[in-house]
Amino acid sequence: CDAETSCPTKLECFSFPNIGLRCAAPNPCSYYKCAPWRKCVVGESYPPQVICTV
Image (cartoon, rainbow, N blue to C red; front, side, top):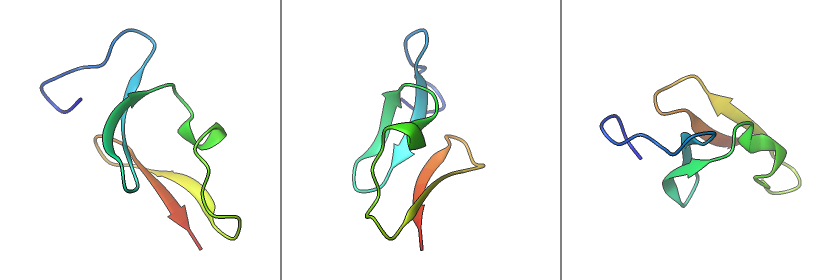
């Protein structure tokens, strides 16, 4: 997925750490697992970026 290629219905485009752009279910922090000492946040960019913060 990218600015020109949309995702199927009910999926959104996200940029995941070490994975890159993927079509995925909304609310990626509910299922993407960061290291135990890091917190998952979604950056306000396009496409949204999943970030593991300290």
